[in-house]
Image (tube, rainbow, N blue to C red; front, top):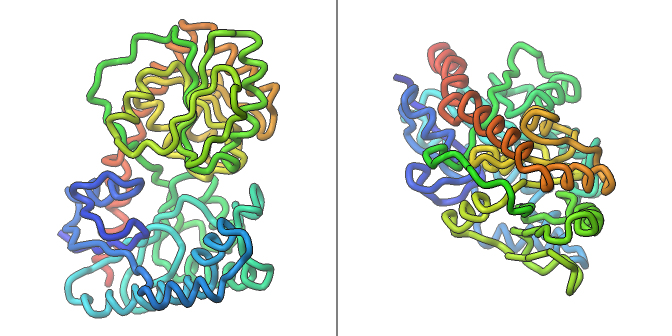
Length: 371
């Protein structure tokens, strides 16, 4: 069995215990490889403060974004990761790097990447999510291109990212493989039975990027048609709905997984009208718990939600279409149940981390065998 080491941005946690957004991929690879460890190339306190000083912007949110995403952090994290890998070179046969925020490829040992997004897709769909200056952006794209071309194999969560890696970065199609992603909610509970609550659930920390304002505009139409309907908003740290807006309940961040799961189980429909979200795991989590999903038709979302089968897809920034989809599902429990059951079946059939691990395993084994 080959030995694998992982590098990611999840911090100092034990992947065998903590369920993070992507940590499950290591557990899924357990039957196929000996996972000798994982780490995050985190900057030292001095380097972090220096980076923040060099990245200063008047707006705190923009300042944080620039400090965490710029060519300096890319190079610094790359150097830290390479230093640790070289010190442990005798312990592993292949490296799995999650996301393209740094690069360890082309340094004499095999490297596989696992990507949910590219900068090219961000610039195409939601350029304001990229906080860098034009010069920094150009420099980042060069670093990103070099990293992708130097990698031995690139696994992608979606076909949208696979196409971007090939078309936007010139990577040979033969070394880019779509393997999908799993859900972090399990399917061990009973099938959902109740769909008459008229409750819509939104879960996302970044309210604006995930279409929160569009949702509030649409909700006025929903409440006019369904006076008893409720919208529950989870994630944003600050209250986002105008005071007294009918039927809107704000929960803020919910970090307790059991409490969050209960909110999903008590809802009728899950709604995420994202302006840009390259691969929203939360849609699969909602589907795993039997919720029909209403989202937007862009990036990888049509690969997760099938319009008219397990949910409804509407155009980006279209509150009228969003309201129509919500009214239809909230007022028709039988249709909501049909979509919800179809979504749960899709997750159980083809959306597990175990399937992702099995899809990655041959490529990783081949890299380990040839190096």
